[in-house]
Every structure is written in C-alpha cells, then in structure tokens.
Image (cartoon, rainbow, N blue to C red; front, side):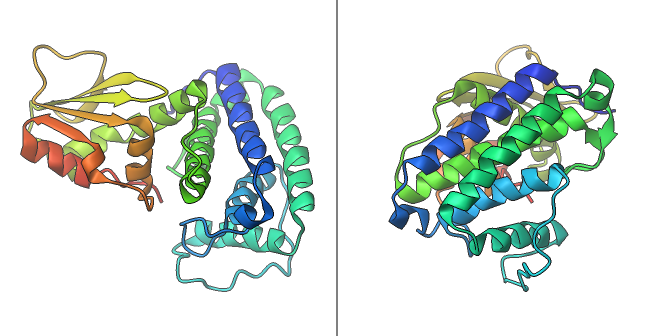
Length: 270
C-alpha cells in the first residue's frame, strides 16, 4: 500500500527547502563555495549541483553527454553514477551559471508539482525506496535536500537548519524507517516498546511497538522499555551516516542494550 502525503503542504516545504539552500549558497564566499564538503569526493558546490541535478532529472533534463564521472571510489550504485554525472556536468560551469539554472529548474519543478492532480500525486511510481506514491517520493526529496543543507552547514561551521516545517517532513520520512530498524536490525523482542523523543527545531515523539511486526503507534500503554532522546539534526546525521554522526548524541533510558542496538543501526540511507 502506498503512502498518501498531503500535496500542498509538502510542496510548500519542498519549495522552502530549495530556497533555504539557495539563500545559504548566496552567503558563501568563493573559498567556502569550493571547500571540501565532508562527503567523499564532493566540494560544497557539488552538493548544490547534486540537489539541482536531481530536480533537473525529474524535470526531464539530461546532463551533458560528455559529463563522464568515471568510476570514483565513493560511487556504489547506478543512482550514485547518475548523481556523479550531474555533479560533473556543473563542474565545468561557473557559480553564476549553476545558481541561475538552480532558480530556473526549481521554478519549473514547483509549477509542475502544483499542476499535478490528486490522482497523479497519489499514483505509484519508482522511488529510492521502491514503488511508492509520488507524494512520498517528494517527501524523500525534502529529507534529501534538508540533510544536504545540514552537510553544507556542518562542513562550514554554520549552525543547523531552522525551518521547522522542512524539519517536520524530513523527520516524518525518517520515522518510516524506525520500525524496521527497531524490529529487524536491532532485533527488539516481541512485545517491546520504544519511545523516540525528538528535540530541536521540530520536537515530536514517536512510539514503536513490536507485536507481529514493529510499527509506529499513536501511543503506548505504560512506560516504554526504551526511550531514546535525540535532536532531529543529530538523528538525520546518524541516519545518513554523516561525518558528524555521533552515537553519543542519543540519550538512552530503560533497556540500555536495546537502546544501544537501535542507535548502532540507525544508518539506513543509500
């Protein structure tokens, strides 16, 4: 069954996230623009090019045929190969050209997304997590763009994102992976309950219960077996296996063994 995501609120958050990256990029010096990003093989400019390249692909564009990314060691799969082709495409462009294309493509994408019917938005399509609704795909895009803003800020020491709406949808995307992490990867026993207290710009609480299979629950009876408290940005770093991911950023209470097992399995992004 596909995941249904509200169309206009999600598009609004995606637009805000695109703009947050553009605004951040506009404040960078040329030295910062060319600085290492902390992601293998990429400078800061390459992160912006990657975000632009993905939306360009979704808009039906193609990178230059001559943009051969070769076979960098950090490329592990066909998605990574396509990402590298777009990054390479923009390495031969100036900063102004890249940002001009960024504004143009994001405007095209925004218009296309708002122009989709409810049926098109909810329809099943290919996504990075397998067949899912197009709306879910766009929620994944919010998460991806949000974590890349974190990457830029972390590399340059520029704090953390402050848009609560973007963080909301990014954390909700992370939430979908937590039952699998708790039930399968951390091997929580049947009947176990776990509470995630997410702090930071978008504070929320997520409950996981393991019955026949682990699932997100609106609430649980009694005290959870394990409670994990973590800032949403730290959770994203752990989920994405980022350079600043720090397992000690998660406070574990209750069943420590289960809590530690969950923390060690949080990295899931491709």
